[in-house]
Image (cartoon, rainbow, N blue to C red):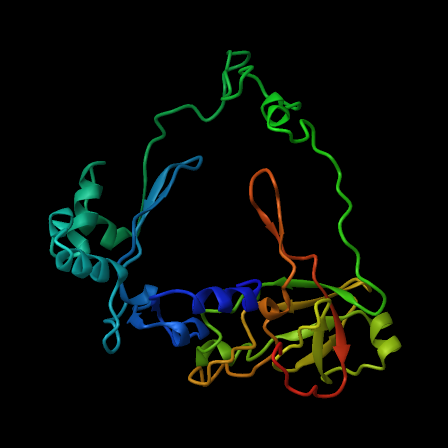
Length: 307
């Protein structure tokens, strides 16, 4: 999560917090109660409904029994509802009944999808408009609006207006984060099969920047952002032309501080820890988190309250 310091303070003010997770992530350390969830390979999930060019339904079904005391989320919800006197809203014994009922509404059943996994259906609506057929959009004019009178009425720019993005100060570089094909966000950093493929993230640094700082491939550095927040762990440098000279890049999902994550503890840097400036779009509420800048610390910093 971005703004981890603000999040930690907010959590401390809560009277009670329950956490549902598949692993002992950092958030479980804040919990009064932990409800261990089984992974997607051990449970049924909601039917995947995709109304694409060819509409289809897809089934996710368990490949193995849940380990230990872990349970699917539907089981937790049903158990809690029963204890709260709301059991009438969960008038079934297992989620397979729900899926089977839903599928029968469209002329198939759970047994069929357990065999095929995916079923395509005939499209009932139009994919394209026919020639100059009139069409009305959900706007005041019924047309595509490049100039929005509705936004203007609320005091916003009726046309998109360029806003210059913040630039890094001298000696700092824009923090860019992304994904790796062998990991799913931060959920799989403790999976030994996947950490065999990628055990930690590294820091992509442009050769021009590496020369200025005297950095070497594989060298460990710590990061400090524009708000003086220092990374808890070091990260290894990867010198590459694949990143601009004014930016650095790392894969998200590493730098875990929970020691029970034996594969993931202390491996690389947690990009979220470095994200303390979160910009919010005033119209639609979207967040921009790439306005954070970091510099390099070549020696291990002394531990402090903000590290």
